Length: 121
Image 1 (cartoon, rainbow, N blue to C red):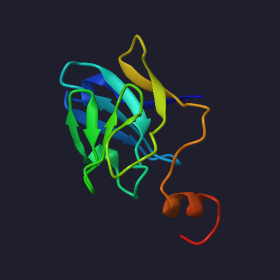
Image 2 (cartoon, rainbow, N blue to C red):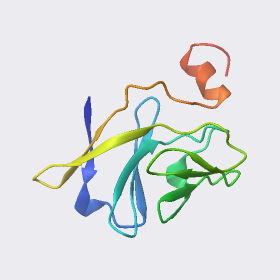
Image 3 (tube, rainbow, N blue to C red):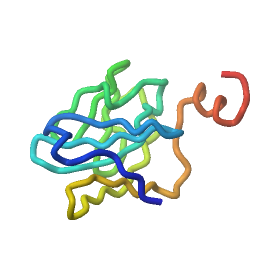
Image 4 (cartoon, one colour):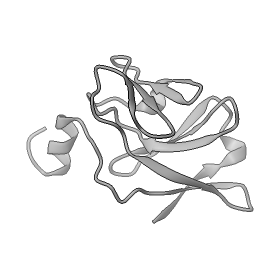
């Protein structure tokens, strides 16, 4: 499933654009001009990675400084233990960024997983 995110011209290098879907996904535009899309929620606790710090090909969670590799979703620094999902990014001929969502199950922190499952948060 392809979801339009935003225009490439509207996403400056070093910034992120959050897609308010469930669960949220963010597109990151690195200082080197690369585009990556990952699940926006830190796997440790409910925090938006789009609000974190982008450095090279890593994003640091604003809450407890877990770091995630934008290429693989792998955790590069604790306290998070589980990786985030990565998604394919495609820029069409009109300069629109699209995200093709992963079919893998997301790794969500317990408070979010319970909410999505309809249980107590």
